[in-house]
Amino acid sequence: MHSDKRANASHDTRQPVLFIPHGGGPCFFMDWNPADTWQGMASFLKGVAATLPQRPRAIVLVSAHWLEPQFSVTGHARPELIYDYYGFPPHTYELTYPAPGEPQLAEQVARLLNAEGMPAQVNAERGFDHGVFIPLKLMFPAADIPVIQLSLRRDMEPQAHLQAGRALAALRDENVLIVGSGMSFHNMRAYGDSRFSAISDEFDGWLTHAVQSPAAERERLLQDWASAPQARLCHPPGGEEHLIPLLVAAGAGGEVAGQRIYSERVMQTTLSAYRFG
Image (cartoon, one colour):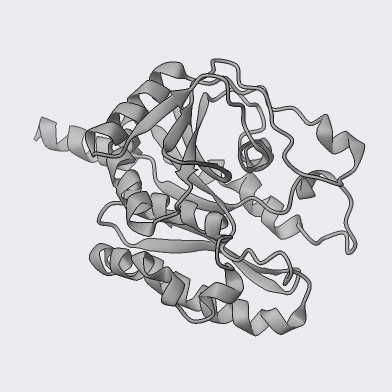
């Protein structure tokens, strides 16, 4: 009986896996017209921490904005910020997020990936891009939880990213929060165009169905996401890097069906967030 209680406690405190939208550049920290353009998304991100079973020991975040030939992990103990957005107000290049790295966890992530036959290396110099620090400034503003960033693989091959997520799933039992940071719709030419409202709705409906399907069906659907209705209008060929972090999250999600935890019309397009576990 005692061991059962321990198992239940462990399950109750296991961290979920998240796929979150990170907005457009430093959008949450500047003025927009209309003023509430990003307000709903910001409120969602600010509320994420309260939904977790406990404060994470560390965060592994997969951002759309780091692509490498093979998986790479940030290994610097004090990562700098990479302001990889352009044409925004000067103050947005002075934003700070002094969260520490965790080199030992970076090495562990690389080992887990390598053990599954996916070459991975630690990059001791790389800092955090805006797909990391912009949403985390809202989610965990104190910047006191260690963070490491995992790259995407440049080929953006669906099965490889699902497999990478599966390789990292055990970290959830070590109180590590795994986060995919991207956008469920990301066609830069379509934002603000009302012709894409129905297009984004159709893809979002398919994506939500896929995420909420049993694990085997979810994986089958996500492997072939490019064949989904309107997929290539929502994520143009070669530009799917904002969707692929969801596949890592789904792989780490295990057998539990995912759920949509946020959905909103932003700039005429539907954007959603998902949780596994």
